[in-house]
Length: 176
Image (cartoon, rainbow, N blue to C red; front, side):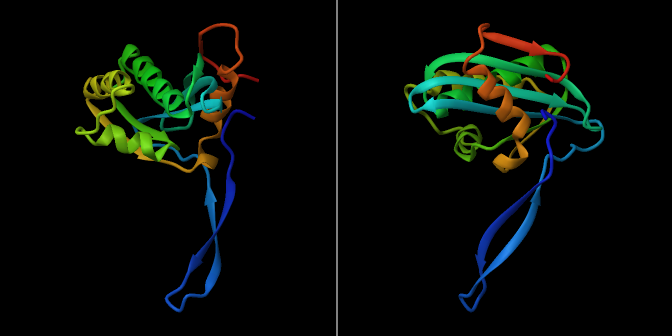
């Protein structure tokens, strides 16, 4: 099912006495605040470098699907696939003249690169700069990390992109 489901996430935590204990945290996609849209993106690479794709979905504050996309990238690293996905998601967002967006992605390193204006990387700088320019075009924006388990729809669309025939598919309705 393309729509996100709740997932229980288990991890070990240590108390002050150093004894591990199990913590259960329910992980799921959550709606943005009233009036906001949420853009979830993900990149996928089958190997590093390997056949890569990206995808994402924009939903409104009620959880209603606004638009989704899937891209065929070709051979790329997982980091490059993540960046392509967020850039193309931002382009779709800007093209639709939407003004308030909360962006969620499960690649913390990408989030850190976008937040740090001093970060440069010769091979990645052009796409990072594209993302920053698009971010600057959106009047109200929040970018945050989410658990992979809460990013299932974007992950599905990214994996779909690795082997689709068209290079870019826009979906006004969720796939079956």
